[in-house]
Image (cartoon, rainbow, N blue to C red; front, side, top):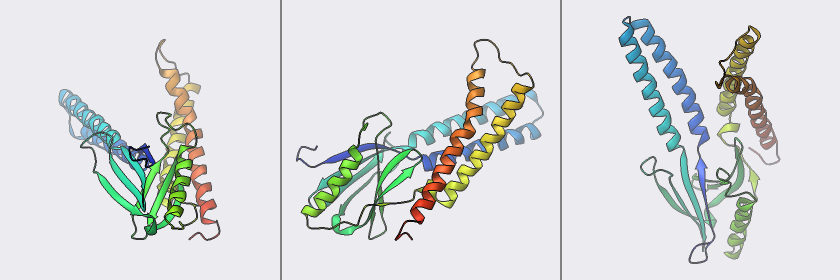
Length: 248
């Protein structure tokens, strides 16, 4: 609650749809750069220096992308609508956005799924979209606070004599053709990695005592299960939402 008694929901928004594809492209770019370095540089010292610089730049960019992925979204129920504030979690790593969305401008109020995250979305008549994510990263929303906040939005609109559109289920980037295609590529890559690790273990690969080799091998072998689950989940949701009555 705010000082004026207005209801506010504030959470950390994780932009996984931006981060994971970007990281995948960065890995491919790094491998390409390292291949070019080995093909063009013959001196061993220069080769090592160039490789270390490339890896260092890669790590720096990965850190910057990861930091920029976290944003703070805050929605406050006010008379006549919702006050929305979006800002980067770390200052200077993203743009600020503020808006007041009148209840009369609501075109849709719906639930999305972003990976394992539950997201509440408002679509307005002028084409803008605002999203609020359940703040489960630090377990600050162990119950149904976001669901209760969605109900509070409808109650506040009714008090202002505005009948909002019925709550519906929508599609996020992960349920789009592009998102499903990306998940498919990740699933294939995880299967190839698991196959390589399984073959190496079958061929007698051993790890030194005290190393993290066994844990890494276990993660590699389990990756197809997690990736396959997300892929199946995204496809099933797309079919369910698009097959619902009134869907476009």
